Image 1: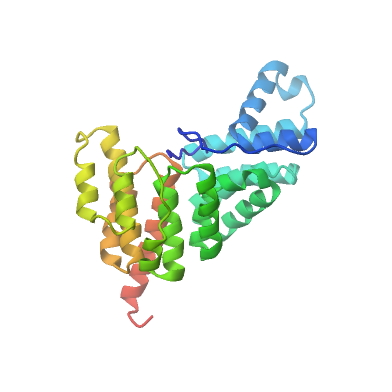
Image 2: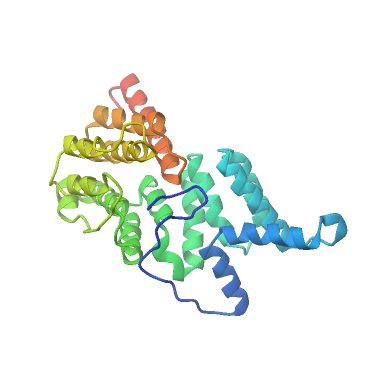
Length: 294
């Protein structure tokens, strides 16, 4: 799926969460399911009832306004500012757990992996009906070294959306850390059809049925310089880099990860994942080169 910074996708999943609980819980769950509604509600309220000088400002209004501002800051890559606003929102209303989803994302984009996991875990706990959708949590768990939990999250996501090669790839990456690449490859989840080029080729690669050259040959079929080609280049290099890294081929992995993060960056959450991963991998490589005995 196309993973935009605002948390929306351009493809609907195959499952639909069932809602339970009280009316107030239902409203909170609705906001969690569609996080942008929180911001839109604040904007509409502001327009209908005027400025704070014209009426008392409720805690709900203040939280909504802070989330709107945080979303705008995140879209401008101002993740620290976004986190500050989300911290304020939770200070005003600690039980507005849907805000933790946003804070988990902006924390991850800053490389604050452990803090990101804290937020995603709390969000996951508070909204059991939405657990199958939490792919961001799965990615954060991978970086936190919680490979069993990560693999379980991606297996759960498969019940919500079963045509996403990225989900299968991340489960493979978790299982490769735990079981080795051969077992992870044999256990690769079937998916499809993922119509984005070169996602099905990448699925074949992770399953041991094609080569990196065949992946890039698929990308080359797209018109040079087109938006589709640029997106395909990003995803190809990101997942080739992750695949090489899982096999211990660090130098080749870094080449692909750098191209994904710097040469073909995209304005989606996965673009930030690529940046975080490349930065961590480059720092680790530099440390190992400076101290080969580590």
